[in-house]
Amino acid sequence: MATEELGEPDLAGVAAALGDPRRIKILYALADGAALPASRLATEAGVSASTVSTHLAGLLANGLVRVEPQGRFRFYRLAGDDVEGILEALARVAPRKPVTSLREHTRSAALRTGRTCYRHLAGRLGVDLFAGLLRLGWIGGGDGRHDPTIAGDRLSAPGHGDQYRLTVTGTAGLAELGVDPDPVTDAAPLRYCVDWTEQRHHLAGRLGAAIADRLLERDWVRRGTVPRSVRLTQAGETGLDRVGLVSSGQLAGRSS
Image 1 (cartoon, helix red, strand yellow):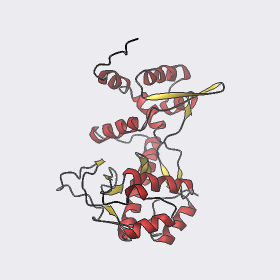
Image 2 (cartoon, rainbow, N blue to C red):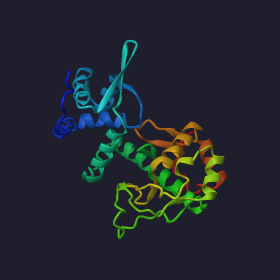
Image 3 (cartoon, helix red, strand yellow):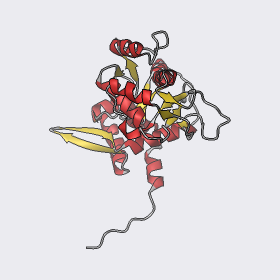
């Protein structure tokens, strides 16, 4: 049987699937990697169970989410990291909406304090952590500041500079924290993003994700109730202060 020939990507179909604010809320609820049932997603989107089923069907049909049956229940996830990338890309070009409710204010404040971005840490927590890595000399080559005169240093976007590199001291220090930097110990530049809330750099790429994974694993950083938000724990405050990555006076808000 002949293989079906595929044509151009259906960009219009995906754009239409993203064209409803309730569907965007569903995708943001899944953006931290969680698998959630339709009932929880209905609450996040502010719709009924029957209505959320229609929205989920549209997202499924366009490859934006996938479903995982578990017994009598069905759990939904983002279809892959590329979907979070779509959300981040849209956030870069979309105009900012005014905050008009307590819930929006709470969500905005949580995301400014700390959040995940492509599986690495962003917000004040991510920026403070990157500043600590630079201050200790674990990463060299820059100062963490956004410089609009540099062509690749665009707000709310992955940085395209090549200045940051992991040092020998950084390799040893990260190893003590249980972070294996082997994939990035060569001379290749480290990736970073220009944080859209802090307008400074935070670490991205494989090393950024490895650090975030380790801090979550140690419960030094814990996911918040707002999708994608993260906060320091008491153990995280103590641990990061002890190694000098972030001083106690600079630490972004933590949870108990």
